[in-house]
Length: 398
Image (cartoon, rainbow, N blue to C red; front, side, top):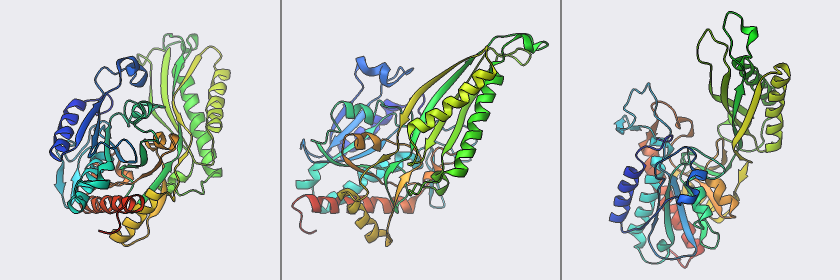
């Protein structure tokens, strides 16, 4: 679970054992001591990444990338979140969709193709990156972000990447919306609840900020709708969520402190500057109306909308595979949430998102995976990889 990062080493030990049994060469990469706290603020445990290779080729790698961390399960489950129960063709559990199924699909999709091609030749280009800390996002992170920093995502080494996020077995994802994450801290002054005007009410000022932000996004969503294929369709409008709000110490005391976290999602037609200006306008309005408070806005993460080439070689290969296996033309879509594809795009590497699981089930109570769709995704990974290798190496037919 992330945060805080529970069972990471246990998971990596298990994955390493499975991949070694499949004759992969394993390299475990952790954030160096001098970079640890800049990549993982507030954490104290190791953040290992597994790099599994079939060969020793330093160039033209075909990289599959999946993150093993999951958001906390929370309460209210009708199936145990960590026992992987199967009922009526569905596997229940935290990470069933996002994204343990993606990791399994990439490993066994390659394994399926090995039964046809063997280990020699082009399959030795395949690399699995099974990474940490995707769920805590960040301008960099201890997983794919750190691997990019250390040269594992160099265009000199990597010819393409497939991120096995839960985007649906008939979809190919070529990017995502933008985002601004931030924390606002509000400082006031305590007083007795019997004479609240003697204090400076931090909660009241925070509430004004929150109301303004929600009113602004409601206004934006009436005026703006993306022309791009963002899924689901409701995500084609700008959005804002205040996911955490807290403050005060007691009901009968004016709160001298409050804070809230916001996540502003951008449609492709918007810029980071647009979003920041709206956020700052609400904070300035609250500061004007509450002159004795102090507001501190700390932006913790931002990314503009990200696009890979929707007609790249790897995208066309997976389009071919979906048409052959599912018998329908795939949708090429943008994700409503950010994911690690941005690190590949920023390096100039052609990349797609393709994986089993339904996006709307990610992070939910009773998260589940349709097993038939999971098995289908393994076939698509195998055929998509084969098609890509046939187009980029000396494989004429199978």
